[in-house]
Length: 214
Image 1 (cartoon, rainbow, N blue to C red):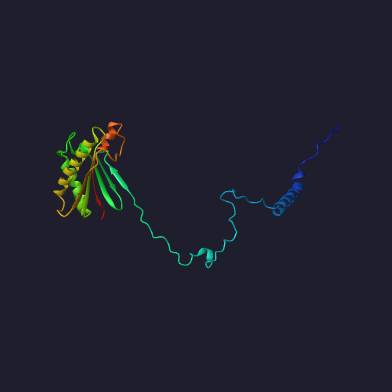
Image 2: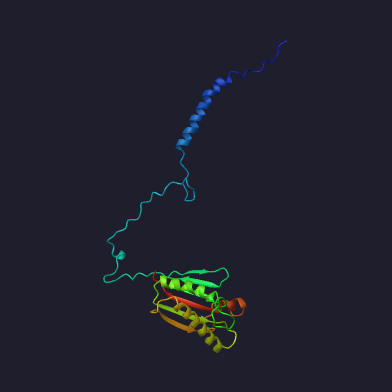
């Protein structure tokens, strides 16, 4: 009995080799001859560098020169302020290029409605005097301030008395040749809101300042 034979496929691989090689060659040729896609500015780090030549500047261009007779403005030194305050706010120090200023809250120095220095006050004032000596200060300002409770007149008197007390303590440690400017401003120049006790406490203070030289 005769049977239909299935065509053999073992000979096909031998014929596919040249065909695949031809296709590969054609694909390579297309790849080499096809134009490259244009690069975009947002192509990422792999984008080609800009080959545009830099703009030439003519150093002799009259527009780049100052007009004849013109002068540069004098240089300025910026005044930088450094502020350091204790955690409880009892003492604050401000440093600028020109001066040093200390602010001590009245509660640290005096009793309520009093201008008599307390026990711890002199130690703090002595530290301020030491800094004034280090800066070779020849003049010292001592200004007193109060909150807005009570009459304005009483605040002026009390703040001046407190400033006098601090000045006298400073004078015990500083050279007798130092000049003092002593003022009592009362409730003027508040640094906090007098509507709260915390704010009023900050406003009740004595400030000591002197020129910065070191």
